[in-house]
Length: 380
Image (cartoon, rainbow, N blue to C red):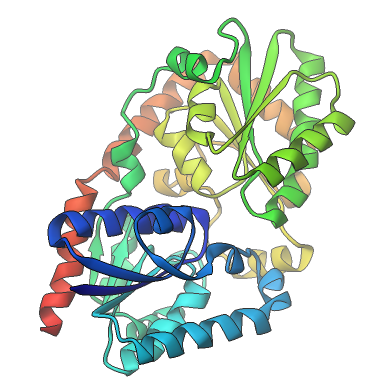
């Protein structure tokens, strides 16, 4: 039996981890998986030591506020794996949690893999020294990331992004609307304010206000959204009833890909959703706010001009980003209407998105499994 330890610290990481585990099962059969994750890993057969919600926190100051809790969880997970040694430990994203854990386990002779590179190409490049001590292999989602690791002689493998294979090169907007029961004769704007509680707190109000701003400027609009769970869905609906009671809004739970596929424009918080909208070839507007102290630290440390993945992959700003103080209803609304009023710009953007989709598309299941098995074979 192949024994795997795994930790995924957020929803997107849980999806990647579940895909990896299911692909390994197809190749190796009998596998025992233990760690931290969400519904994806649970359905893949992982025995959860903690739910991923315990790790799902974003921002420098936000993490500091929960430091002791996170430290205790990491120590207990470390002790568990030292006492119940896996053949390999795989940390999926959550670098601030996983790298110290990986370093401790690798120091005890356990092979370690980290899946999803942190943004060392954007800030805190000095972390590569720590990463070199923590991992036997880094698995990257984007081809431009490998150069940093090769420069520091860290074993690295570009595996592509599973979403780039799962999402078709062309998606039918009309079919998506039928699946959701959304009107086919209206312009639809999708609102995706994020999955974490801290993101909802920062984004729901300006997103709803931007939607209402658009409603007053343009006729025949319908708005839709998808949230991670019923609690978040209720939070959005309650706020919509107060902030924009006249707005036509349909809210779903766990249907974000369909919601984006059905939309003419997507307003979203920076993160995996921006990549998904890019792969679906939908014009998007990024609105993002974080804690004031987090922003002040980040703006002094980040070395790249853009934060969303479509812009980073393109190497220039191809979609608008309204960040922090610029994340206002008027700015967000103007950018949304700009896409709706300029179809030629949308057509050009779709061409850009198609090229980026092809760039990160691989047979990721096979490449992933091969990379993991190479690390295991080297340990044999």
